[in-house]
Length: 480
Ligand SMILES: [Zn+2]
Image 1 (spheres, rainbow, N blue to C red):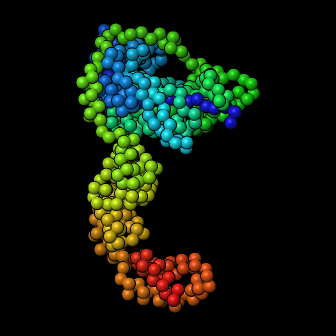
Image 2 (cartoon, rainbow, N blue to C red; image 1 turned 90 degrees about the vertical axis):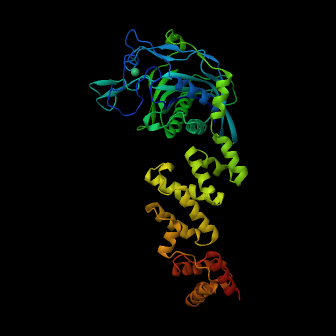
């Protein structure tokens, strides 16, 4: 490729406080329009905001978890712009003294680990929402403004333009989501807009240092859309540059249905917003003791947890990465292992049958019908040889639909593995006698022909014969 992409993300994450950032209104999602509002969040004259201490706590925790420096003196500023969903005509945000700065996260890329620097994290209030009568603003006769979301607390996490592919941008956003979930400061429900990203992208001739003109795409709220929108935008900008054209600095919107980005407006600069200090709020002073107390209160984070699973249990970095990608999944794994199951088998079952079933029913792991205890027990039965792993699949399926313990299912269905040599030997003999063709093939050197015989034996025993024993006995008899 002649050009390389330079990508930076601004991720907005709604914090999971019960009340809004500057008033006592509830933050609950999906309530009837304009029922969670008061004079403060409606920006009526004469009201005074008071900062929600929880918001500061969550922002500091996010800062620590994302390896930032926490600013001990931080303040709010007004970002001035006009839009119907913004009743005050300014958004209370932070400008030159954000709560946290200079952090980083590490992501996995095809070339190995890559560090993405975080410029800053600031606190701000969310705006309201326009509810159009049609599907888009263009085909609507009218639009309502819902102010329920006005004043819901957000943190904005701004990265340096350190990413160079759509895949890296996705991995970065996944990592941020995972960390915010671990520290329990955001629900990160992307479909509800809890976590959304503005993507900045420009191209420059490969190997050069100077940044090109960037385009911004706002409010992208799925990982797939992050990848797709950036992929499209790289192609679009590449075509313009190849034809000798210039990129216009602008805000574009991603249309997932058509798979294209469209121009919305030329991009504002900081001057356009006329930032000014917020006179109604006192600065936020944080002490070393507070920061230390928050640091101590944080749980084991994904990277540390992944390293522990690799070192302690010998999981591959890939497996450990998947298991620790969400806190719920990591805790489920620990519980399966605590039950006495082999860690590698536990990882295999979680990434195999468990994930498959959860995905097909659109369930989260915390709602899994098979809990860690029963899966742990079942894995131990496989380890002991009571059932084969093939029968394990059947037991797992039954557990998914019933609350029974694996032992009971195995007993009720008569699934105990046949490990009696005499019993298997008899079946092996009869299968050899009944299948002269594969036997002859095997004896004339086609060792693969043994597969057909194994298949016959497993069929006759309904999968219950111990596979190692079957293979061993069969080879013994055929090689005689
Ligand atoms: Zn309010």
